[in-house]
Image (cartoon, rainbow, N blue to C red; front, side, top):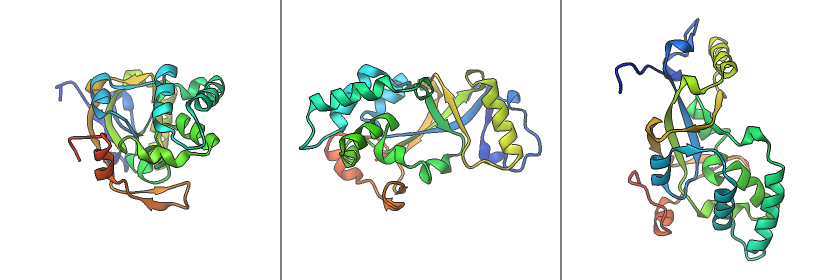
Length: 213
């Protein structure tokens, strides 16, 4: 860690009476997803949603005997036109626990955009067959976070309301990804919070690999 790097880690400040995030250079935050290629993230960082890449991934991830590629692309274009700018951002949680509880759908089904698309097409379950459930640990530069979000975080920490603190940025550089993990289980919010346990051995056979598995 660089000598001038000072990281705010939520778990270390749960009892703070006052907080000035501008005393820090970075905020530790976590991004949950289901990447097809871990190395791509480690080399290119976490990037905002891209139409060309998202369409390609949709065709890989969404599989059904009742839906063909042409139908997927048609539905994709309709959803893309309706996509708000706020969703064309990289979202991270400051409290990792939320990604293993209320927001575990990112680990199970991946991209919220493709998740909604697959649901519309009636084949959401196919999203469990591709990619590796992953939480990336990131040190996000404070300068890349909006002033409003910085102030919101300070206020929420002081109020002890820390369960669901999120930040959104234009992207996370590869050097700011400091670690990653593959959780063993998480509740599925679309199936009454029944525990979902990824079959990493099966995913590995399909070609989705990680040095941490």
